[in-house]
Image 1 (cartoon, rainbow, N blue to C red):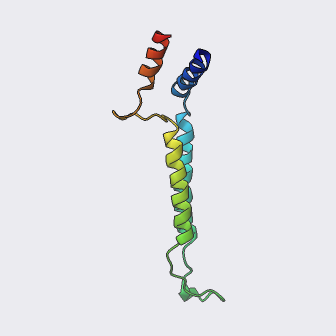
Image 2 (image 1 turned 60 degrees about the horizontal axis):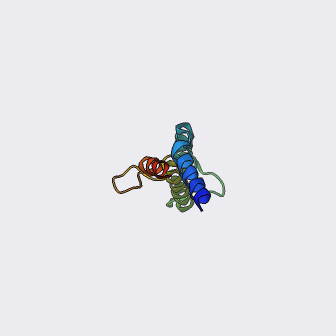
Image 3 (image 1 turned 90 degrees about the horizontal axis):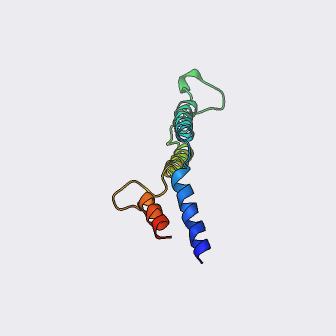
Length: 106
């Protein structure tokens, strides 16, 4: 039992010590927002005064583009939480204190 508990404390220590590098979230943030900007510009309607054959005026709310953005933005928020999965608020777990206390007890 003690070895199992020690192993779990070690895993908790690794979660606290080894985090996702900050550059990953920065790259993903840049990719999400630039993708959304390109989609907003690239999926615009055609100018009806030009008279393109077979293309009428298509003013609409880009629902699928918005869904893609919400999906990717949600994915981005999950990736940002991986930096510190236990949080930094006052009501979150203080992992360093828990690890230090468990090492002192055992």
